[in-house]
Image (cartoon, rainbow, N blue to C red):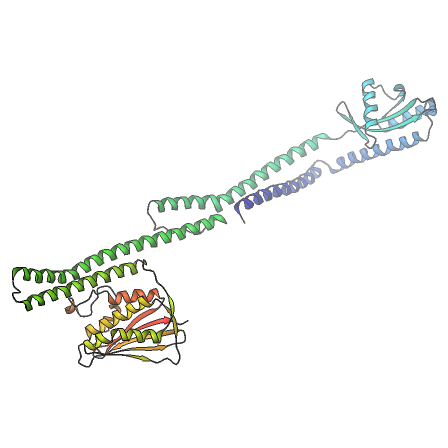
Amino acid sequence: MHLTKRFFTMNALAVLFSIGLTVLAVIIFVAAYTKIFGHKADINELKNVFELRTGISEIKRNAQTLEFAQLLDKKNQQELSDRVKALGANAILLFNREVLFSTRKFDLIDIEKSLVLSGDMPNQDTLEIDGKTFFFARVDYKLPSGDLGVLLLLAPIKLKTSFYTLLGIFTVSVFILFFLLMNFWVSYTFSKGIISPVSRLKDAAVKISEGDLSCEIAEEGEGEVRELGRTLELMRIKLKESIYLQQKYDENRKFLVSSISHDLKTPVTSIIGYIQGIIDGVAKTPEKMEEYLETARSKGILVNAMIDDLLLYSKLDLNQLPYHFEKSDLVNYLQDCVGDHKYEYEKAKLSLEFINELNEPVLVLIDRERLRRVIQNILDNAVMYIDKPDGRVAIILRETRTSAIIEIKDNGKGIPEANLPHIFERFYRVDPSRKNADGSGLGLAIAKQIVEGHEGKIWARSVVGEGTRIMISLKKL
């Protein structure tokens, strides 16, 4: 429920509960009062009022059976006087608003007021005169001459007003008390469920703005406040992750710069040395000079490749390199990859073959250029680390129920088991003695980034002395 609706609902319930509790308290108060101060007195009072009303009504009915002239008879007037006095009431007989008979003396203004009020309220039987309440009955006589005769019967109502005054004060006081208590309950509930959590959220927001992301924000409160707490907690987590990733990227950049600078230093020093040798005249013959220049050129190519690898890895690591996926048949694709590297392997006197273990074609969603770079990096690594005269590399394609598996297997010297978990790390070399090997040390790290960009997996198995197998798993379409 929204906070606004909840607030109005709780206030409405507070009023209703206050009214209900007040009614209950009044019932208990009346019961206790009548028990303590006399139930019979109040009953007798109500009984007297009822008898007075009944008596006045009966006199009115008798008067309606008489003619106006009969009321002028002294005997009838005496009988009327006795009956109304027995009830504690009074009778007034008027002819054209002139008093002909009255059981007691009334002020003419009061008589006129009684006539007006009784004429204006034909359906009521009480009226107020000088702050006093009277039962009244009126009988009108229309005479043949066109004159009007009126008989007024007035009986004062004597009620015990002290009890009702006390009851009114008690009712108002109890209602105010219950209303204040219910409002205190509403305020306490809102303070517990809204104000206090909002205050803690404010403190948490201040800490976040100051860079303190260590304090967890609890989900507490009601409705929108709980959602706000959940949102702030998600924001805190994302900010913390963002800062962690930023620190990681900064460390990566520092590490990359440091490592690549170290790896670049050797070929650059060689280039400078060979060029300096040419300048100093060490290479005196054309053959020697050509050798120096060719070496310097190869070292320059190596430097360029290392810089390209560094830039590619940085873009992959920061997710700044877009992928262009397309449906591809892996059999034809891997056959093309083998064809691209056939000459290089023949030149290195190594065997490269493709083995298809599929029963039918398999389609996958790949970025052809990026995945080609993965195959190239793995095959280049195999060339560098196979030192056998009968070196062989095979690309084997097989499948599982959900994935296509590309296995690149060689018969090189293998990788020790302790080194296998690290071969996909940046600048990691299994053999420290080959620190100056041709390569940036980023080949398998780049391969891992690209495969994971395809939502695939890459891993290695190796036995020392028998060779290494690199497996790549891609989802089938």
